[in-house]
Image (cartoon, rainbow, N blue to C red):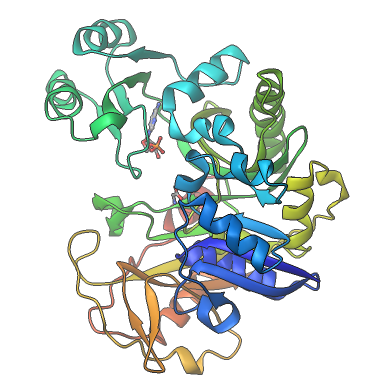
Length: 425
Ligand code: AMP
Ligand code: GLY
């Protein structure tokens, strides 16, 4: 029986915790810092997830067998390198591999070197270089801050005016700080977007499933960008043939490439894809699970999550049995009024005690005086299931109605794009 440490505090980390708590291999789970949901199945611990020394001290004291990293920042900081030096098992890529997410230019250079299907791009360090690249690529063009920008560093320019204003944002106002010192100027791909999630062991990979996120705050994909307001899995776009193509043309050459560079890639690979004329192209790589995509991908995994993560970090994923449900899952994020702008905190959440078998992951919640109260923008993720997308949507919104807090906000159209794809097939 194994002891686990999970790093992070969102719905994704609660989803990891629930799957691992139900795993026969797992005895005790700690979550740093965790939330009101992880508090009921883990021991929440107040550790700085960016401080490898503090984490390793804890791992030694508590005999942790495996550490699971939720967000990208510890990976980009090199936590895996520190754990490997100390002989401790952790899930994820080393600092070099984490650049597939933390540097958009690094990622594009790897894709170009190893023939991974991707849009034309030019790395630019100045406005003049960007102007020349834009004239070469043509409009519409995508301007991407090279570094981590909390999902906000991408500007799509349809017109010359858009491009001028993107240049001001990146190079004059320096809105993304150091992250925007260099930019990747990219051909704008037009097609259907989906994400594919794989777990890698340095050489091989397993595809878990596909998902589609809903990044904008309001119905009809309107309003400001958020961390994600809901997701569903699988998407009707991901036929078995498409997933195989993603594996063969994108994931395999990327893993071979990283190995060739001397840094075999382990952990989650989240592949953001645009399908153009039935061919998949990479929009972005992330080196972790998505949030809220984990909340639909993980509950559809019927085999042991522990085995999968353990053998990924041991470098032998072929030892992990993989079984994925053929049902559909839909998660709807309940957020605080005002999110992603300013929002109040501390509202009591009602209805959580009457859930019975319904699946609800906590995100911005905490336990306070025996009550669960809100303490973040994305508060609760309900998850519905069904034998098809429509039934999963209905199930999710049924659960939405059973939970309440003052200012509860959510999108009413999660999954509708998927229904549209199905009706157009
Ligand atoms: P990212 O932060 O890289 O996921 O980009 C945010 C969003 O911008 C993506 O989800 C896409 O919708 C869009 N995007 C990024 N790169 C491109 C591209 N080269 N072509 C078209 N859309 C893109
Ligand atoms: N849901 C988007 C992300 O996790 O990056």
